[in-house]
Each structure stands twice: as structure tokens, then as C-alpha cells.
Image (cartoon, rainbow, N blue to C red; front, top):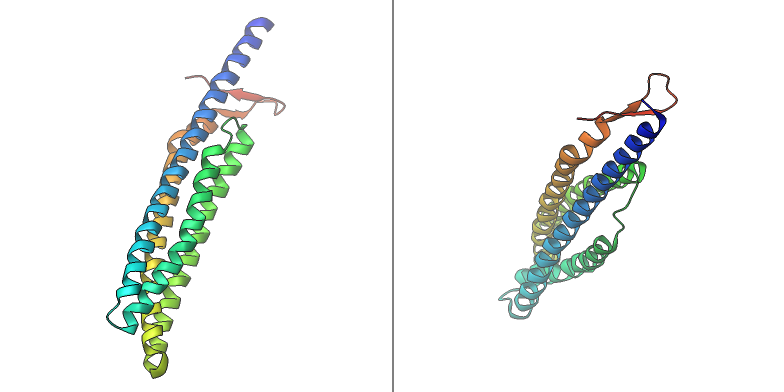
Length: 195
């Protein structure tokens, strides 16, 4: 193949790959935006509902339940808003290495969070158990425990779904791009396979 044709083909493939990476990153950040909107919506509903429930609770156990829901989701909203804004402002023109590194980090964050969520549910169970041996804090421990179990359970489901959506996106969009690139037979350059 003449040198000009080789150079043209290399530049063309680089442009195609760059465009596909840019599209992949744009889609990844759109997924993050949608996830943060979902988390923010959950938080808002819980803050409003929890605030009303806290003010109108018929007993102390329910008051503590709604109080924890309100406080917990204030933090969730405090994470969702900056998370959404960050995903909206991210650069999509990333190279292969940075794209794969960002994808790995995203998946890891949701997996680590899922582990933490199991801890929240466990803490809720522990508080409910402690309520049986602490009659003076029974209502508080039960209310807080129930809230932690619900909030932790939601976050566990949310983080697993988020991980799954990102993993599936990577498998369908990024993996095929990466499979087209391999070391040349001499090990000095790269081969890009054309379909």
C-alpha cells in the first residue's frame, strides 16, 4: 500500500474511532445525568414526605422514622445535584486510555457504594435489634432502623442498577471498539481491524 494511502487510512480510522469514543463518553455522561436525576427525585420526595411525616407523626417511632428519611435524603440530594452538574460539564473528547479508565472508575464507584449500602441495611437491622433491649430508646432505634433499612435498600438497588447500566453500555459500545485494536505482528505498532 503506498505511503499516502496508509496515512489516509490511519487518519480516517483515527477520526472514526475518536468519534465513536466521543459518542460513548457522551452517552456515559447522559446515563450519569439520568441516574443523578433519579437519585435527586427520590431524595426530594423523601425530604418533602419525611418533613410532613415528621411534623404530623402520630407517635415517636414514626417521628424518628420520618426524621431519618428527611436527614438521609438531604445528603442524597446534596450528592445528586453536584453529581448531575459534574456529568453535564464533563469533556467527551477523551482518548482510549482515559475513556477506559473513567469507565472503570465509574463501575467501581457503584460497586463500592453497593457494599456501603449493605452496611446501611445492616445498621438498620442492628438498631431494630438494639431497640428490644433499650426501652428508653426503643422508638428512636426502631424508627431510625426502619428508615436505614428502607434507604439502604433503595440505594443498594439503585447502585446495582447503575452498575448494570454502565457495564452493559460498556459491553455494547466500548468493548467492540477495543476489540478492533491489537498490537501488530512485530509488536511495535497497532493494527486496526476494519469491518
